Length: 227
View 1 (cartoon, one colour):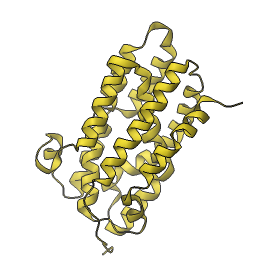
View 2: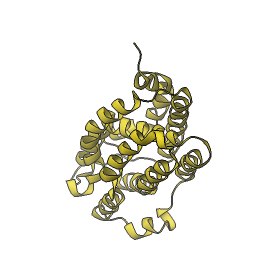
View 3: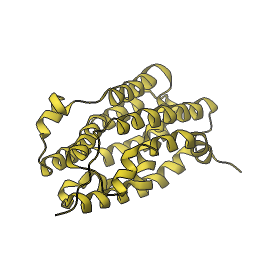
């Protein structure tokens, strides 16, 4: 018997693969990412991760009374995710980047168009359509972290000769999200309303597309050998 989590994976697999086809992934695995590229990625990560807790809160506030079981899950997510944007700023500092420019969304620290659109889309879905759409983003980000996050972090560490203090966001999420995926799978398998299911699928496909656009827009890579 098919479950909604299985249906979600099947109905978003094409969009997921298109995101994974972004050249940055192969470049990372070949050790061909320079510091500017990594800092650009961290900058964009900051500009969506800083919205994670506000989005979770907004979702919870829009759910009707009969969705208390979802609100309970959101409370757990909030506890887990709170403050992660500061980890990213610390990584930027450890790499010699300008964390305060990123925090202030200034100069080279600005959010990309794709990230601005992704975040705006999610707020719009929560406010005007179906708050359950937020879980499409959860699937994209946590599924990607579990799938390749740890491998990418280890290759960046080797190729750029980075300390763990410069990789706290990637390293921590590749571990944390292993447990999160089991939690997410169990939660999604409780979603039985067809409208809610479609909202999650549609949102995931949109976020895969926009996140992929961000990845494809990162600065070109250059082979860097560890010192």
